[in-house]
Length: 83
Image 1: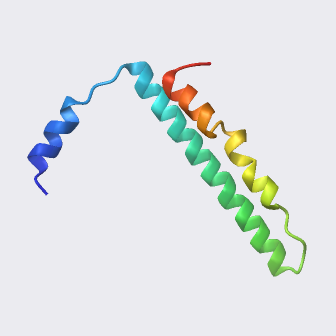
Image 2: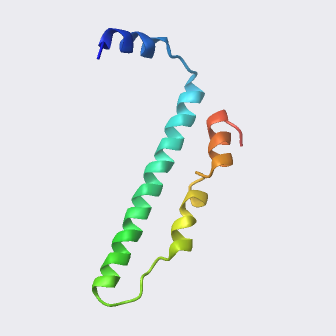
């Protein structure tokens, strides 16, 4: 890979502090959602190993994007800096 052209293209990218902040916020929400999903999966596996009913069903997993504002329209609004 020609790193010279890569560095050049990255250095040409510019965004405002607010745009960058919005991207970082959205990324942090993705990380939080991932952590919660992994914890939910672990709890389910633990309960299965004990012969118990799962703690989190499909509906609980599908609610995570909404909880963290990661559904499409909300993510677009966040990136645009809209309330």
